[in-house]
Image (spheres, rainbow, N blue to C red):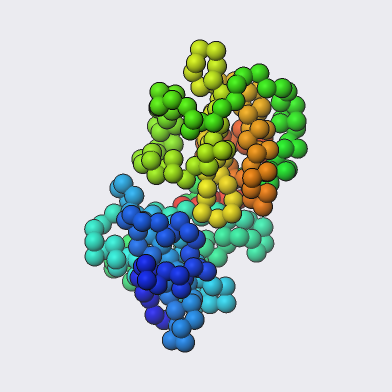
Amino acid sequence: MNFIQINETNRNDFAALLPPPAYLGGSRASLGAYDDAGALCGAASLQLLDDSYELDWLYVVPERRRSGIGTGLLEQLCLFINATARYPVLTSFSVDTEPGGQGQDLYAFFQSLHQERFIRMGFVFDLSFSHTRYVVSPETLLRAPVLQNSGIQKAKQQLFFEQSPLIQRKVFSEIAPFYAIDDMERWKASCIPSLCQLRIDETGDPACVIFVQRTGGKDLELSFLHSKYPNELFRLLRIVTARAQAEYPESSLRFDAVNDISQRLAEKIFPDAARLQVYEAEA
């Protein structure tokens, strides 16, 4: 097996294996694997965030899995990390618990990584359950009872990124501590402006806010839902969902229930959604 760092000159060779976000600039290392015949076998991508490395992509073509390619890619990345600086390494992935479901190969892979060669490099990956992810099509979500009964719009609906800097700062002062957003500009860059909406109450303050972001795949992420009044949230969510269906008809919406409040909200809004289990691995 041959491993190579992916760069501007060869990245098109690996376009079928890496998602577009892995080609963004910044502190990123992307590796590809190919056999002696030149066939592409896998790819991995690592980015340096504020205080940790994030393994945000690891893929091996299905017919070559369980042959050591993923382990080899990860080992090469660990060697790269040791050659630069020592940081925690984090990754997360979702698992469909149905037989043969998505993500089960990754779960088994990270379970198997307590190997002597990784321990010698100082990497022991601890795998733990993180939270539940809900995935639902906009069409299905529009039929959710809580949205069907959301009533008429009472407050003014506006696009978030058309608001004054003062309003934007008010919203982000609530988001950043709650979501532990370290790089606000990078976070904003992944937002879909037409699907990031809010309502302003009679005092001029944001009463309801919804953010939708790109995920790197075809799905969209409902990354932030906040409202002083639940019914207002449901009304705005119906508008955002309808627009998502019109603009991205092939996409599903996902929502990560990361705490008790978001879990209760998800159970109310997404009763028919597919549910995935999100796991984190850290070394």
